[in-house]
Length: 142
Image (spheres, rainbow, N blue to C red):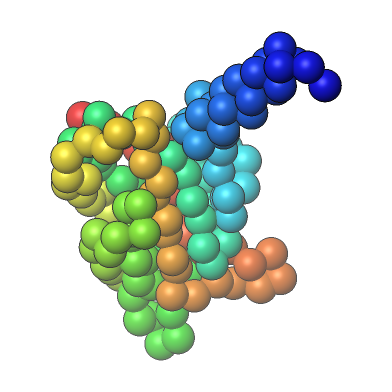
């Protein structure tokens, strides 16, 4: 291989590394979450499994996270959801009433150098056989 193809190959590798480090399609990526549904009043939501992840733009300073636990814990105990942003603990949200949405405003801190930030939800309990965790409504970013 001559010097020109090596330079082209090196540029392709560097370009791929840059795109894959902060890919533009990240906003559409979720993990541990089912597809969108709608409850009878018309509220859009997604079910989580025991853990769920999604991404928000990195310039979001605060977000409102609507959660609802339809299936309470044993003896009616609240379901707990631990929230992390970019692997950093952010909050624990208690969901005591199965009939109510809990809308929690969360400060995400200063923007990062990447386009998106990952939010992880860890639910204290899931319900078999489909391993349903909690309902997550449409997030409001500010």
